[in-house]
Length: 200
Image (cartoon, rainbow, N blue to C red):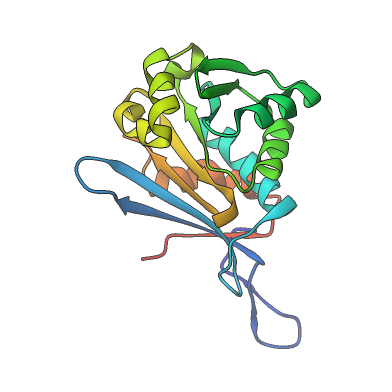
């Protein structure tokens, strides 16, 4: 549901969906173009976590990427990521000393990744440049973490900094602005009882 709410039967009160996805432009200074996505519980404004969050985020990212390739980047807890991917037969590529890349995980694999690594910060790159290895970006991820995205995001449709435990994603993108993000994700979140908003 993407409507602001419906009247509760017999009460006259507005019944809001349990979840909200707030989408807003971010000012990160300089020429950095960014959009923030915050997945929260509508009533208490707390981050959505656990299984519900994993299901929603795993629907959001393929819809943001559209027909373009995407990869998931990890730059910490590499051994845990390797072990997790091996057990679940998720493709993984060692990209740099402290960076592994998961090329094009499907929606179910993304759900598992978001659920298992909820307490971690990781990244997602999407666009034609994600079709092949990017040694410069992946080497910088190994050294600088996700700050490396600021140097390369213009080559991609987007680079996303995912902080699932906080219910927060920062999209760095030259081509995705809040209204386009909403247009792309609305069909993907339709099965969930979620309100999409642009707070200011």
